[in-house]
Length: 83
Image 1 (cartoon, helix red, strand yellow):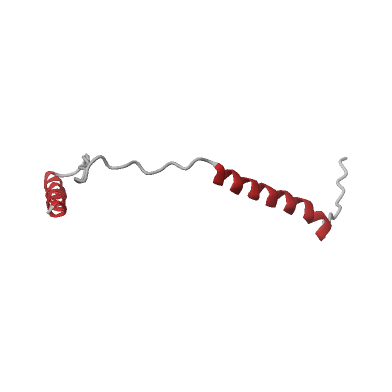
Image 2 (cartoon, helix red, strand yellow):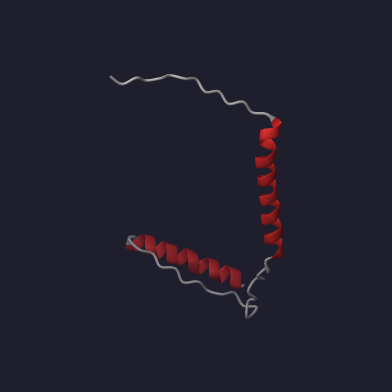
């Protein structure tokens, strides 16, 4: 025969028990922020010329009509921006 004991376990929190974990978390957060600030920042890549660049986009699984419409919209937007 197996005996099963039932016991109620209660955990009491107080400020002394929470002080060290909270302090560890705060120290880790401050260390991460300081390290993040010390990392070298990469600047944006400069555009080689003043002319706008053209991106090529591929469309898959679209009907011929939709492809023509998308192509026309993109070309019209490029022409408008170049004016």
